[in-house]
Length: 89
Image (tube, rainbow, N blue to C red; front, side):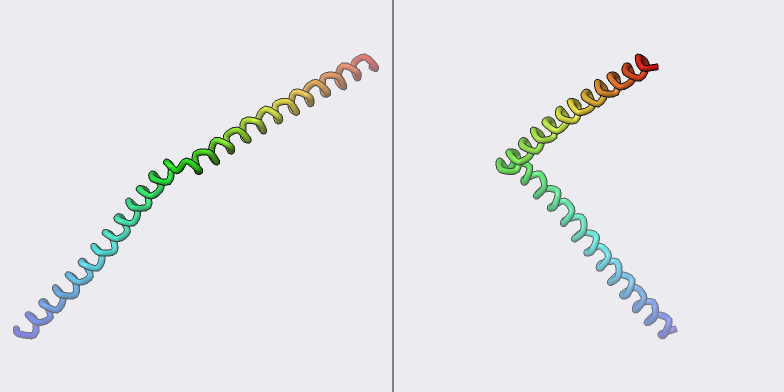
């Protein structure tokens, strides 16, 4: 009976150690995750980053306008070529 009690106590000790270790890893993971989110939120207030983002937005808008002009030119050219084919036929 003594050996059984010793095994139970050892098993409880090992399982509680594993539980504490798992809780420590989980706490470190979630604490690090929340800290990373806080750092990300703080970096959004950086004026240099805001200026860079504004420049990127302007570049994207200008590129969209140029693509629209190119596509309008392609539509015009296609219309001219199709009208020319119907006239020749």
